[in-house]
Image 1 (cartoon, rainbow, N blue to C red):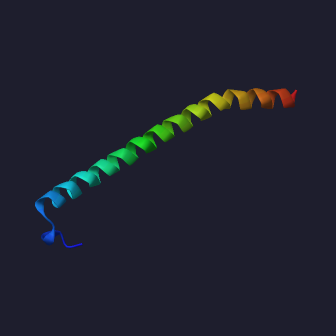
Image 2: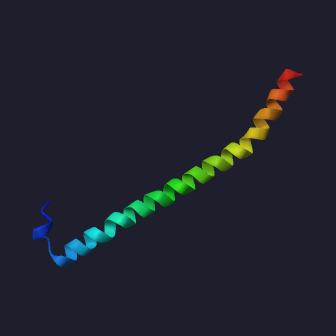
Image 3: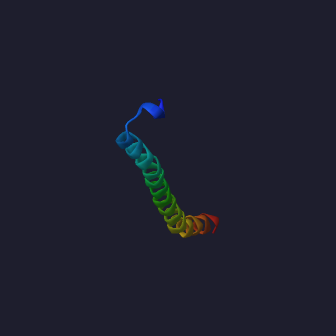
Length: 56
């Protein structure tokens, strides 16, 4: 796509959507990682207690 032919409005919209999309995905990724970490922290004691139960 040739930037020089686009209208000022299209350029503005293009400049606006790029960073916003990156920000959106960064937030989604951060939420996903936080949930994943919380799940790991929540499941870990349960796995350890199951391990102890089978060891005895």
